[in-house]
Image: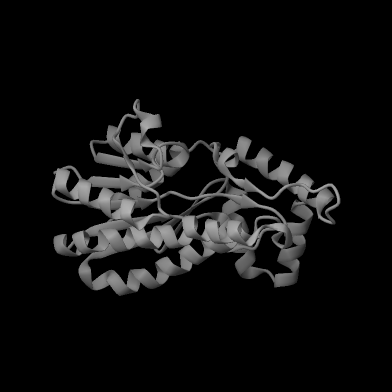
Amino acid sequence: MSKVILITGGSSGIGKSIGEFLKEKGFVVYGTSRNPEKYKDSKFPILALDVANNTTIKKTVSTIVENEGRLDVLVNNAGAGITGPIEEIPEEEIKKNFETNLFGPINVIKAVLPQMRQQKDGLIINITSIAGYMGLPYRGIYSASKGALELVTEAFRMEIKDFNIKMTNVAPGDFATNIAAGRYHAPLHENSPYKKPYGATLNLMNTHVDAGSNPIMMAEAVYKIINTPNPKVHYKIGAFMQKFSVVLKRILPDIVYEKLLMNHYKL
């Protein structure tokens, strides 16, 4: 029997690549979007879901279970970028980012757990970010929301182990997607004390995304995890130096690692 997959944020970028790859491998794939009518040409069904709206989450999960009789894998991929000096990011934008990157994924997990527990089987893959392993300048809120999801996963894994439900994190580095277009950018204020360093860092970040890896790497990684009996707690996917930066943070003194980051961002 083909496994049934739910991918939040499956209409573009990494989510779309994962969905198309898994569809080709014979899985039953459902993606989600806040505006599914825009993606009528999708290679797999796109259902209406807003991770900030619990009603839409429950409705989508119910629809899939009604259609297929089961739900085997959740790929918690929906997320949002945010950049800016923390001092200048409006409080409502900070809360909105955590709603999308942390609280939303938690609510989707809560919605699928009863069905997976009934099946006595399931897999939840949370798409986080290598940025979640370190506090990056002018990406601090994004780092914090993705890092929080990493830690939540660590705890969740132990809590659901008795139900034969597996959970893991997959942290991508920079991939060539349209994430920058949907990212919240704090405005570059002319009189801001952060204008010069923030502007330069923003240009550098966008360059990294444009030159990022092919999203198919993420699709292949997710496929391998689905076929792994006991997934690891953490996976990191991307360029070697991005993955190695996590190792360096673990072994270097804090002040040395901070200097490396500041040199990288020319701060």
